[in-house]
Length: 131
Image 1 (spheres, rainbow, N blue to C red):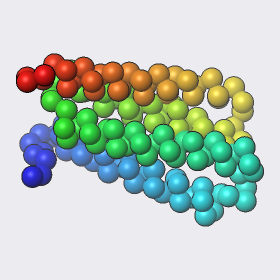
Image 2 (image 1 turned 180 degrees about the vertical axis):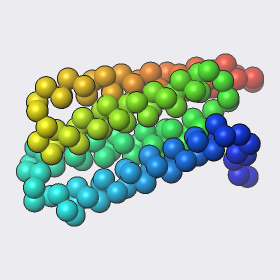
Image 3 (image 1 turned 180 degrees about the horizontal axis):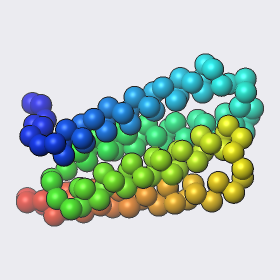
């Protein structure tokens, strides 16, 4: 069975899945192969954490996009996962590369985005018929 892409909105969701997943792999590879000597121990830990959350939430985005019933809760989940990746993982990537420490204040906002995404995804499934 394959997912039906029947609208420009669905096409943009499919493109986002590809971009979010590919960027997780590329950033993971960059950290492992090209940046390792530049990051230091703390930077490596931050980078690894950023990649882990980035990748898992790319998968969560895919789950929401292809399995969750369409509706406002699903839309909220998808936006929250992307926002979480940008704010949480993005701030950790930046900190690993030497960004100012104040940027760490953004990281919990990304974590909140992840939590909202998971709760919205649960809500989406909970509101579907048969549940």
